[in-house]
Every structure is written in structure tokens, then in C-alpha cells.
Length: 560
Image 1 (cartoon, rainbow, N blue to C red):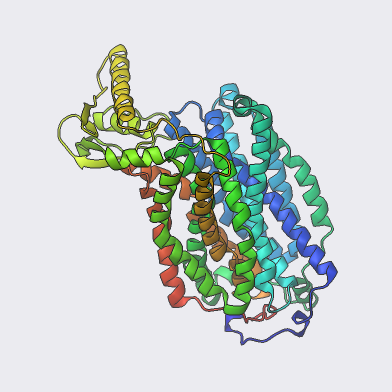
Image 2 (image 1 turned 90 degrees about the vertical axis):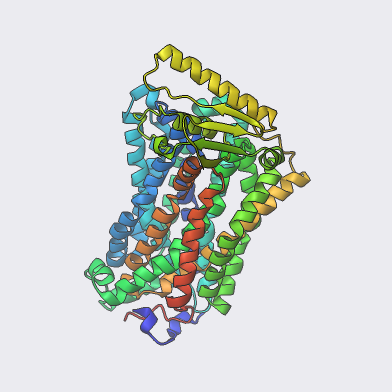
């Protein structure tokens, strides 16, 4: 294991980077940008995709199930890491991630032509989830290959700086997807975009695929892998060496719990959950949200390079651990400030007219209906659904009898629909919803956020808050590729580093939006979803500080 090796420097790694090597690294990063673009189109358009492919469900379940389909791509990423990592350690880095980009690009294009639920029924979401899983498998093999490839080209003392370019690719891919979506949205109008225009960014990925394949074909193999192959030292069984030998497996576990788990939740909070919070909880229109997030990405992205380069000087560990700790401490105040800035009327109403739901806990169900089969008939469940549909943050209190919603000084009693004739249930439903929405309006709760003037003080305040969270992302993510590469020997590096990265980012990170939104739906408090990233970032900080060793001076050419 490389971390057991003294800080030996391979002579060939001391020389400066040649023009050809810089070109190869640039090409690698550019190809990865396109692959992230493909992957994150779905996440950015999750709300529209939910309506297109899960239209048989209620609106809340549409969003959550669309996010779970998004998460399906993350869930299978570790399996892609195992499969493609093994190939990368046996046959080489270059050809392995040439295959991954073909799978990613073609899967994305097919989403663009896939008929929706109204056209082919349940087959539509089934095929969609299958395509998302193919994308996840491809991405599982992509990142480890790109990070390993770049690190093995970089001179010693600059691995953090050079791999930081790979770290920017996820953010740049997200930014590219936002630009294409905004351009298409603006050109077609919101109605046409939601109907069919959303397919254009997916179809356009075919052009990016062609460019990416051409780029990948022009690359040279990693010098570290070539040297190892010439010496006959490639691993015959990288999976067995990585996960069947305790000396390597314990480092895989530490890399997951002490690094990538916390990095992932900070990453997905700062660059994805903020979007759902703005559009869902704060009711900011999607186009404005896209622009705000894009502006914050432009401001924050250079800090990937700043922290990557800084990690070459002071170490990877202190920067990553500081990012986890600061994010965990700052999320609640930042998100509350975001509410005040993006929807001040909502913040004022929450302060002056709190909403409570008094109900019998025994009649309250978990508010998640992904199949559309469950029927919420109790007074508690019906009240929770109406409040969730209005994006109301409320406090649960224990009560007796029928559930009662209190808004300011008004008390509205819910109803149970079980056993009621359809006409009577429909009438009571309309009356209850009208009473709740009327009381909310009277108490100052806005139906949606007021338009945010471009480049106004309010606009810059929101962008500033979002940018701070992107900077947290750059702290935890900028140095991590170099650190993961340095933790494992060349012969099993692709396999060993890919698995903890993709379990951390695929499972802990990828499940964050759906889990956080489900927590909010269940508890009623729109800030409670933040406990998910706070808890996992805190665990990583403690484990990382206690057990993870610094790696910046490791010789990555060592094979023991």
C-alpha cells in the first residue's frame, strides 16, 4: 500500500509537465465535462421528468420518485467502479474510459427520444430507470480513470493542482447543462419546453459524444501504467487485492467514511439540494433558480484550483476536514438567510404566523407514495398532504380526534375520507383545501416568491449565499482526487479508489435530495432535511481527523 511507503520520489515524476502531457490532461478533463453534462441533465430537469414519466402519481410523489430515479444512477455507480476499475487496472486507463463515455452518451441520447408515460404507460419509467442505471455504471468507471490518469501524468508536488482540473469538471458539466437548458427554455417558452423542448438538451448530447470520443482516441496511455505493464507488474486480480486483503480493504473503508462520505453530502447540498430548496420550499421560479445557481458556480469554480494547489503545500487532509466542519456548522444559518433573501414574504409570515398541525400520531403515515397505490385517508395524512402541496413549514404537535391545522389565530379541522362516498369526499377535500389556502393567504404566506430583479441587491445576496456553499464544495472536493490516488498503489489504484468514491458520492450524496425532501415531507419543517448532510459531514470530520493520514508526499509510482 502506498501509504506504507516512505516519501520516495520517482525521478521521472520530478520533471516538469511537457506540452503533450498538458494537452492530454486538458483533453481528459474536457471529455469528463461532457460526461458530467450528460449525467446532470436529468437532475436539473427532475421536476419536468417527474411529470412526463411518473404522471400517474400525485405531485409530491412525482418529484420524490423522479429524484429516486435520479438516485438510481448513483446507486449503481459502485458496481461500475468495480467492473470498470478492474478493467482499468488490467488493460489500461485509456481504453476503459473510452468505453464509459460511449455508454453514457448513448444512454443520454435515448432519454431524449423515449416516449413518456402517457404514450407507453409503465414501460416509460422502467426504461428511464434502466437508462439511468447504465449512466451510473458508466460514471462509476469514468471518475476513477480520469483522476488516476491525470495524477499519473502530473509531476510530484503538483498533483493537487493538476487533479483539481478534473474536480472542476463536475461543476462545469452542471453549469453547461444549465446554460443549454436556459437557452432552450428561453427560446421555446416555458410551456413548449415543459411539453417537448426538454428533450433538446438530451438529443444535443450526441454532438458532445462525438467530440468526446474523438478526444479520447487522441490520448496516450498513462506513463505509470505503461511502466508497470512493461515491467510485468500489472495485477491479475485487482478485486481480490483491493478488497480481499485487509491492508488494502481498511484503507478503502477509511477513504469512504473518513473522506468521500462527508465530501459527497457537502457537494450535493451545495450544488443540487439548493436548487430543490429554492424552487420547492421557497417557490422561486425554475428559470431564475437556474440563473442564480449558474452565477454561483461561475464564482465558486476557480476555488477548486485554489484549494487543489493549496493542498500541494499544506496537505489534502486539513482542507477537506475544514470544509466538512465549516459546512456542518453553517448550513442552518445559511439556509435561513436564503429564505429571508429569496422569499422575504414567506420568512415574515413564518415569523408572525406559525403553522402547527395537531394530530393523533397513531393515524399519521409516512408521507411517501412512490407507487401511487397507497391512499392517504386519515385526517392527519390529508392535512399533511395539503400543507406539503403548499410548501408550508409547520410544527407537529400531539392532539386528539381529527387533525387540526392552526395558521396564526385560525384553526381548521381536517377530515377523514375513509368510508365516504366519492362525491362527499371530493366536496370535503375542496372545502378543506380552500380553507387552508385562504388562511395561508390571509396570514401573508405567498403562493410563490416575487420576481427577483436581475443583478439587484436581492439577487446578489442570494448568489453570495449560494457561492459560499459552492466554496464549501471546492474545499472538500478540490483536493480529494489527488488524495485518493495517493492512498493506493498503481497496480490496484483504479479499482481501489473508485469504489469508496462512488459509494460516498453515489449512495450518500446521490440519495441526499430525495432523502432530505422525504424528511421535510414527514416532519413538516423545511430545514430538517439539512440534518442529513450535517450528520454525515460531522462523522467524516471525526473519523478523518482521527484515522486518515496525510498523503501529499507519497510516491505514487510505488507498487507496494
